[in-house]
Image (tube, one colour):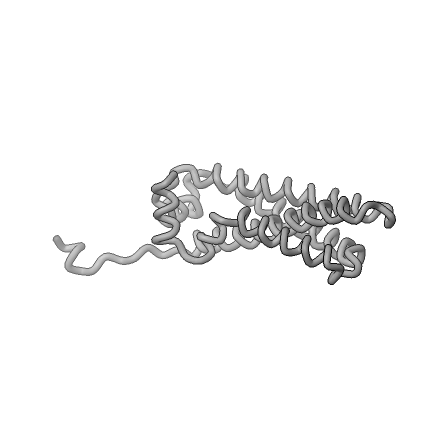
Length: 173
């Protein structure tokens, strides 16, 4: 595991580093959001809830489409041949992508359910209980958004990956 961390921080780009630290970054942002809410800089969350339900529904469709596309591909397809060239460390790219898609799908369902529940919370409920619920809601929102962006980014990178060509002298020797 320590070797993987070193490789990510040495050879990985900014997106790989953010992805590796996504839970830490998200928790920090959640605490910032909770502080902003407790300082009453955010007047109403209810207006954002309906938009979140729409966003979550669209993301569920995108993730479902990606799951369906990956399930229809065979292990010997061009996509997985490219994936093995793109990421030399992992042999089972299919399983890793499917697990990541499944987790994003489940987080998104949790976000959708929490958003619907949050619509029905009594306005007179304890401010700190609402703050904790908002922190969980914001955590799920950020994780779902990031996972969707990262999954699309990695799939496009695999599809468009071109290995470095060897020089003419290397190929002759």
